[in-house]
Length: 71
Image: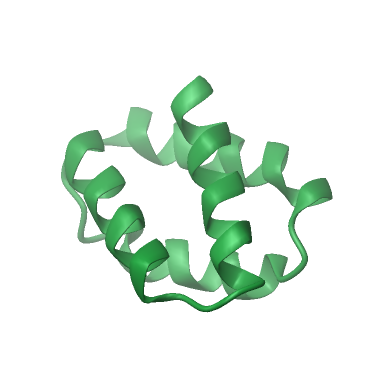
């Protein structure tokens, strides 16, 4: 669990220069960070959020997911 939280924080840090709505992204991620128990569940949540989100925030979520997956 702590490893997942660390990975999330690192992905947020790496995505920051590329996203337009960083505060909204961080708020969205932090809202579920405490509830998610594993990486698969977290990625599923992100994919669901991407389908619901509108541009340009949708792109921010995709950038974060890409950074998260490369860690």
